[in-house]
Amino acid sequence: MVKDIICFTPKGRAIIDKLNNEAQLHGIAPANVFECFGAASGTLDKFVKSGFAENHALIFVGATGIAVRAVSPYVADKMSDSPVVVIDDAGQFVIPILSGHVGGANKLAIILARLIGAIPVITTSTDVNGAFSVDVFAEENHLTIKNREGIRKVSAKAIEGKPVTISIKDYPPKDKVDITIADETDAEYTLLLSPKKYTIGIGLKKDRDPDDVEKFIFDTLNVNNINICDVYAVCTIDIKQDEPAIVRFCSKYRIPLITFEAPVLARCEGDFTSSEFVKETVGVDNVCERAALLGAGSGGSIYMKRQAYEGMTVAIAKRR
Image (tube, rainbow, N blue to C red; front, side, top):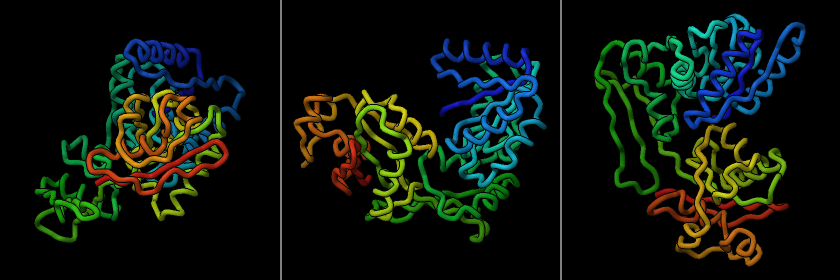
């Protein structure tokens, strides 16, 4: 998760410095820092607009009211909004105010609080009542929510202390597994979840334009009638794990990035599109197909073989 953090005073900057220093000591990537002192009002909107566009986690060091007013024009959907967290200017409290569950703002707030010795202030009902959270369950288990209206209904029953059951349909699966979470006293309160079925394998030349990479991936998905919500992971060779276009895509769409070393890719068995140029460059004859298949796990299969366009290659595998 890429994190952007903004402050409005020297005290706020001191908190950011402490936070980033502690993060690095614990092996956590530091946040990108923005300052909005004095009359630099345009900085605030630019910070929020770009953060939401890239689906970064936004951290405000300052008043909650400032954060609320700043993000309000860009709030659209609880399933895709950027996570937003506020730290007060004295570093005493850390408050997630948007996308606490699906976006991970609650978890982020707890981590930030531990790093600076503050108190996390969590207000989501399932958390404060110690109840089962269906959207967190779906996010942590890489499941697609097929009827989102069920989130509120099932969560309400869980908060009331009603029993909630989880059932798996059609196992072993022929094509997919449907997982139903329901209040066992009322069939109306049902949430249908489905495992994310596809992995994307990608290879590309260095410093490709992130917008071009995103468009190529979406064009490929659209041709194959695959929704981005059904993508389990993006997979590639380890030397591309910090490639800006790949990192941005995964961060923007909250998709895990799985990387493999060249010898591991080479040992993957299958009928792959071979390239001597790729082999001479990275040590294995094909990256995208091999990575997609390995990422799909045991029983996975190639769904779409290597497609190439202007220095980019994409393949799709289907999980069992």
